[in-house]
Image 1 (cartoon, rainbow, N blue to C red):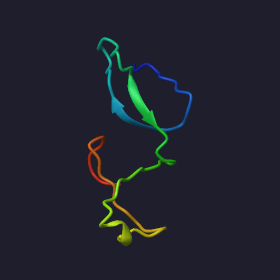
Image 2: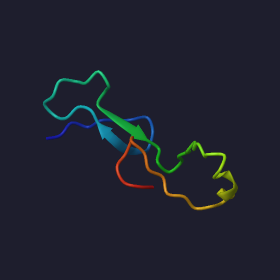
Image 3: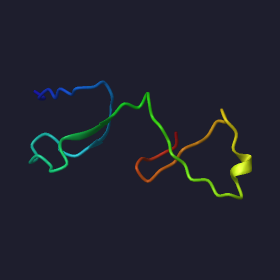
Image 4: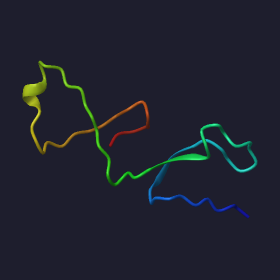
Length: 69
């Protein structure tokens, strides 16, 4: 039987810090994010800024997650 974990918001688990049977991590049990409302802050080189347009589609990669958004 798995224990229930209740959280104050609806979201998606993006990282698990503690699993069943393990001592509670100092980082908590897991990281939860509201992935339906995310904001990206991007740094663009001055030489590339002329290529950026409002409403343009982008592909996001990060060290914080695998894959691409």
